[in-house]
Image (cartoon, rainbow, N blue to C red; front, side, top):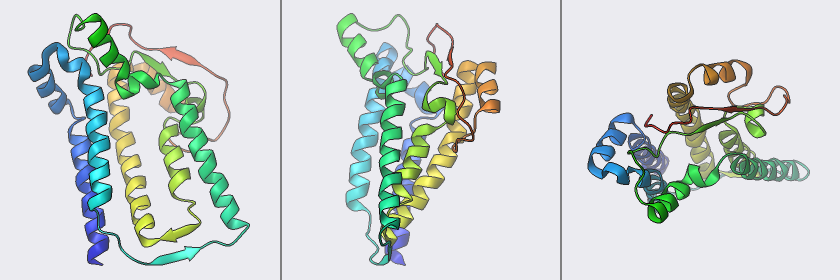
Length: 218
C-alpha cells in the first residue's frame, strides 16, 4: 500500500509542477523576467516537463503485483487498440503545427531572426478542427487512453499510472479549453458544441477555422 501511495504522490507532484508552469501567473512572471526571450518559454517548458517526467519515472516506487494477463485473442485486441492510439497520436501531430506545439519554431525564429517585436510566443495562431480534431476536441488525450488502458499484461503499477493519467487528461482538458476560449472566443465555443471532448460519435467533414492573426499572450 505504501508503494502505491508513493507512486501516486510522485506523479501528482509532477502534475502539479507541470500545471503550475502553465498558469497565467507563471507565464506573466516569465514574461517579466525574460522579456522578448519569452518566445523560448514553450520550448523550455517542454524540455523541463520531459526531464522531470524521466526523474519521476525513475524515482517513483514500483508496487509489485500482476493483476491479470489477457490470453489471445483478447491480448491481440489490446495491442491493436494500443497501435491505433500510437497512430492517432502521430496523426494529431501531423495535423497541428508540431514544431510550434513543441516550441521549436519559436526558438528557431528567435535565433535566426532575433527576438520578436513583442513578448509573444504562447498563444496559438490557428484553431485546427480538421482530421482527428474533427472527431474529438482532444485526440492526443484519447490516444493516451488507447495506449495505456488496453494493456494486456496489467500490473498494479501500470493500472495506478493509467488512472492517474486518465484523471490528469480530464482535468487538463478543462483548463486547456479555458485557455482556448480566451484565445479564439466564439469560434472555440461553437467547436465545443459540435465536437465531443474525447470519444468520437461521428465522422464529420474536414474543416479549418483560423484564429486571430496577431500573436499575444493568453
